[in-house]
Length: 271
Image (cartoon, rainbow, N blue to C red; front, side, top):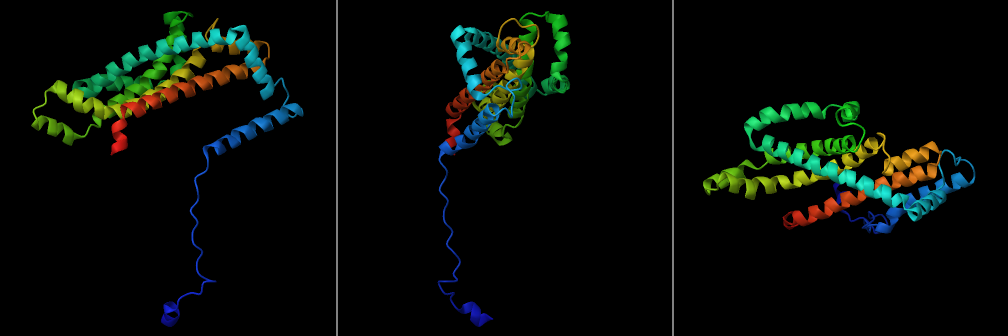
């Protein structure tokens, strides 16, 4: 057996050399979505998928063009975007105030974090009846829902980011004689920034989800109103248009935050 082991294998039985696989082009990522659209269109055209259950992609496209031409889509887009911006602004102020208080202070962690964790576990959509009682059926409950949905992910990530600051860095700043404000400004907040940006992305996703629910509350404008109105007339094409716009807005805001992340965290690429 050792003699056999010492002999070199002939070329015909030598193990094949592994071929390095080239990365696929990004264009291939469109393959499955385009295939799904084609299958959807064929199913609608052949009657397998009835139009009253789900309109075909071409009909959805035509409905989107009609809504855009009539100005209804633009008006609904502006109203929904305004609600999200107001809700995110209110939620960001609350989340940052609570996150900084709980993260920077032991008493803050003791007094602030437990009730926030309790509220976080509540099904916040179940708070809609209370919001209607407190704020009525105007804009306030819709903005409050968005703010609530946005605030919890941001709070959790800000709090965790501050608490996870490297203690060796804090010891070094103590040795170097940093003041409390300098330590916060130059060490704690930069260390918490990556986690806070993750919370921002998560919060924006929940904010759009909250808006969809909030606009079911006696809305007379916005994408939710557009979808509800289309549902009453069994216009599945317009319902899909509204959902596509919601999805597009969610993707656009996520891309915006990722661009901000790349700019704010340029130092990570140099590690």
